Length: 206
Image 1 (cartoon, rainbow, N blue to C red):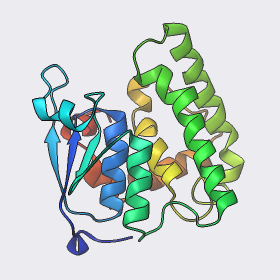
Image 2 (cartoon, rainbow, N blue to C red):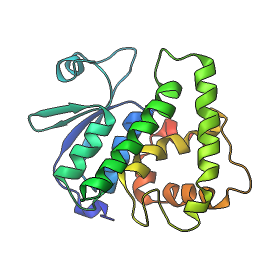
Image 3 (cartoon, rainbow, N blue to C red):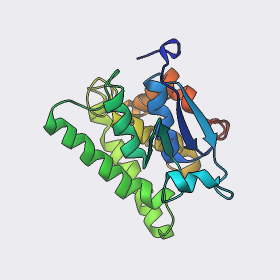
Image 4 (cartoon, one colour):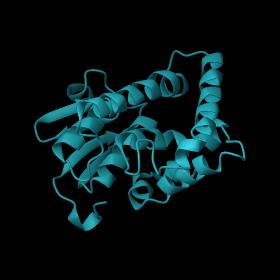
């Protein structure tokens, strides 16, 4: 893992202090040890230039020189391609496709019902039940490997980690038997890059 002393290339991230999608991007930026500045957006009073950079007027939005890119998954993939060390996405096409399918499932089944408008309370409840059962079911996997896609951190871990961090405030708990999954979560939460990615509001969630 890169260290803060190796940071380079100043970018600007439009973020907000408790946005789960912006948190993903901050985690990747910290893991890549990139130098970046954060514009903390009040979602009730968004800066005018955000709408000029992002047609959806949303966070996260990353500005890198003349490029403005939005949507957390696209930003994470861009960062991994632009700054390939440490690598977070596999090189071979089959593995890359599996990672992208995993990201798609996370966003459709879990993140959208819990963190995006337009979903009913029953849909959020179903998502929470799926998260709990899926994480419990992954216990046997985590007893054999360190991360979701093997023994190296991947973009899948970076994508799901902000949700895992929010489990207490979402009222999601793991069964006691899922010890290996809990160890996986603790492993991520203890990473210096993850700690640096937390805003004060996010630190207060645990």
